[in-house]
Image (cartoon, rainbow, N blue to C red):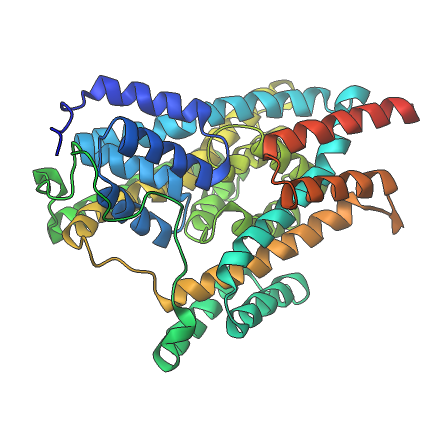
Length: 442
């Protein structure tokens, strides 16, 4: 077996995490694949088994698993500062890009050319959401019971208006009971496509047999200390906002809502978007349904986790409500985007920095449970409901079909599902189609 690579300096790690933040397109699967190729296969900072062990833990948590995996590896390499740096640099480029795009959208979104481009992108977004439901469902709905869970989730959130947290709890309850009665129905499927576990591999810096570093050894005192510190930081920041703007101000309200949302993001961003729509669009009126679709389109075309669409929601909410006056809309949008991003990602840092030592102490004993399997099935129904919600706003105009949008959406769905065209290519093609149609009709 070859010798392991030399220890990684903090500066070298910082350069890698910043680079990853700028190139992390392709959703969580693509981001995890990038980290695997770079950190496991090329740089050999961590072994295959240790990488998968960390990934399994991140997949059990609410929140963006690719971001959490970066935090975990950064923490394992360079303690708490390494984890914080990895997570911040993974998210920061996306936040900066989204603030800039949100400003362009709000300031010049009604320019005919930009309106035409967005008219082409919106049908593509519906197709992308449908493709996500199909992709997740094809590997999750392995039997009639799980199909039934997905159907019940769709009916609950789309037709009955059941809150997303109750759907998650209900699905977990089904799995908890069903796992005891019929465990064979809840056997987990495959994980992310990586090299086969157990295959011979060159020695890694953090290898299968590398002893757990001192900072990663579990103790209840450390778990409690980090957990309490994270919660205290979140409460202190919210209290500061409430003190300045009042507890019913828009910024404190955004912080409270998105902090709560961060604890419910099982199954990825698509699963929690209906919950965001219920509150951001229908209850708080931070933006409308059309703007929400546009925000998802922008989120799909920028690096970083898709849940960063919340930065767009915050920016539009701050701009629309003119939090700092009509002459400071950009400042209001930027501050709101930063507030929303902070409260959305803070729980991910706490989960990893507090729970990482516990995970390191249980290597070889992490597995998916029946409740998580049924939550994954419910997520399929929730995502399908999101496609229906978006489709009603994109494909219909006061009940009349929009044939241009239907044609673009159908072509996008065929490209994604039949020919497996990349998301970025599909969006660009649909944007060009929308622009050409706008000139044709104009």
